[in-house]
Length: 426
Ligand code: EPU
Image (cartoon, rainbow, N blue to C red; front, side, top):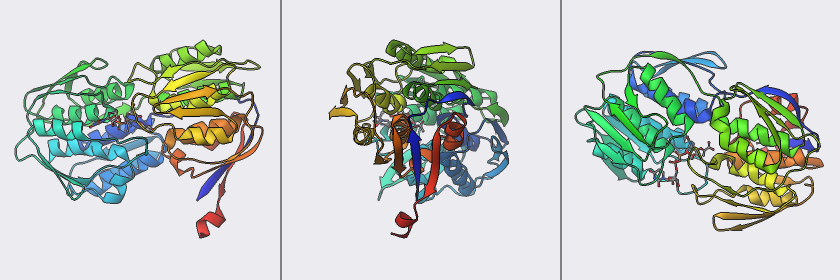
């Protein structure tokens, strides 16, 4: 077990590159199951979840070549196994994304219910209902999803009762090889969904409506390989934007897609923070500036992203005025509040609302990370706090932030990772 030791209170200054998007590359890797030909990917982030997805694909029969940290090729010519290993599936929600492609390509799959960050119920009923509507037989026995399509999947009209990112991705991947034209309505419009569609269309799929609430997918006989560059990670970008603001520093982000973080930029500007931007760069300048609290309501894209709610809670906690955050997507996504309060924040949780009364400064503390974005929030808290803090259970952060220590050190942060020998032996 490892912990991060951070001595905060230093304004972060400099420029860094944003990595490829975790939540784009995971569905795109799953899409490699739809073709016999190689799918070559650039801008692949080196993350724990990406390794898990590569291991999963490997267990199914895919050949994976890693050319360097950011460029990989996956070829799923022969899929000889459709029983997904429980440990890998349970460690990551995105493992459910293999279900649609497997049913479309080989007509069978067996997997446990997927795991992932403990931020709410995280049901998969839309995935299973949609695939059933496409003609698959899907049952759940002893906690295992057992799915089979005796003939090719058939097109359908599926309306999502609630917007689901991976639900949209799973059904749209399955529909690419289904017979006929599928209509998916009330779909997710997240940039990661659009990125997947762009990649699938380059593989020969016929999908229209990207970035809107309705997708039309004309099924094709087969898909081919392609070479694709993964979109920059808007959540990583947003986290470093908050890092600049919370440490009263100045950070320039390169390799970013500014149009995917418009709502985040608007929120920072409403707080009184200076943001400059080009198409592929953003600079947040908060040198010597105070910021005010801003009320936030999370919403599906293009609304304020639930994944940045935890980082912004840390920033709101150090504002000059009170604020509230309403979390509308997940039922249990305020896990960071306890740790932030240990730094001296005044955050009270009332159901899905966080009421934040600001404090002028954070003090160092020992806190425990509970999920990916909550961990990022605690790192931000520690960067703002005077003194040396420790953050335990940081394996969560390795799931979604590439080279966190290197990037923060490059910006002048004082932090290092320590192997916790005592906890390791306990
Ligand atoms: N939902 C259902 N039934 C379903 C699917 C979803 O009721 O079949 C509900 C969920 O319980 C939740 C809501 O719908 O209340 C939205 O869930 P969604 O399916 O959109 O979430 P997800 O696809 O599991 C993805 C990201 C999350 C991100 C959410 C929301 C990936 C791999 N994960 O999750 O990312 O928070 O969309 O934008 O794309 C993260 O990166 O830290 C992370 C959790």
